[in-house]
Image (cartoon, rainbow over all chains, first blue to last red):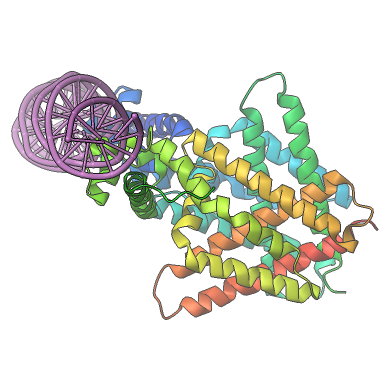
Length: 212
Length: 212
DNA sequence: AATTCCAGAGAACAGTTGTTAACTGCATGG
DNA sequence: CCATGCAGTTAACAACTGTTCTCTGGAATT
């Protein structure tokens, strides 16, 4: 099935990716609703009208960015939640994984955090949909855990949403820790790790005593 | 000390408030980083240059909006957390209070949720500072509760931050419930209430078993 | 009553924006 | 090899932006 793209289509996808990358860079210091189409094409080095060959509008580009930032994250979520071991180990491994992801894709994380409640409705909706999928997947994994025996579906989904929100909140804190002077960065990162660990621990406790 | 403002100062404050109100309205469907100064003055019906008599820039106006939206909320927070009664009653009363606030000041809530991670740095910082104050106040109230006996200061602050984040998340969900067709609004609101209640219940459980 | 002060108006500026139309050159399929 | 398709270009448009300077009318001060 895999068909090597003609040089025509390849060049097109290359430009498209360049537009996405440039936009993501420009969005470090502004929101999507103020991102101009000309601004993006200027950063890529292409004519303004070329933009329309790839996206209907900047909102459309935003939706594509949501796909890029969250679409490829699903397998990671599943393996994270279903990892084995002691409660404490699982928490540590989850937070470590979040930290690594923020470190590897800071612009993606910033984009999601910023546009989740941002001013562009279609983008908000796309993010909401992806996060709902995450919550569903987390729920499915939680259901397999013996701790969840006797839980109702609604309760499982409620806990899954709590975890997803907590992951996003933690990611955002790690992102803030990356900004500012470099020498104090490990200290700030460590502080976030500790805070997130304790919050996860507390939620885990609530989980284990839910059916009392 | 209270000195009745002269006609001069009174008129100025009136215009200033009109600018803030107009901005808040315009921000329902965009982010602060795309809000234009002329756009705001046009909505109020004054000359563009009049803007500079009140604010240095739209970012400056944003900081003033943070003050307006969160500054007057501190007494409410204190009384909410320190309310007496059964655990379950306290949760219900807290969520009811959040729902009422979102209903009364939806534009304020939207603004805070949107700009907390938004594209304007001074505004982000102002919100972060106010939320940190909230967390500090929540911590002080939690410390008075007998349940908190034996808790370290760091653990109390960690729980306070968790509560503040949870309140904001719940407020944002209530806000989403307000949008869309009116007839299904009570159903959506009820669903949010139920979700938030169970999440608070779980956090409360974790809290009571923290020192096991 | 005369003077100062200042919120807001008005006009003009250089630069930006999104969108349209008609084009060019090159990879593609017949 | 030739005709078609289409990614990207060029030029032009009306509308918009933030900011400066100069001016004005009326409240505040003396």
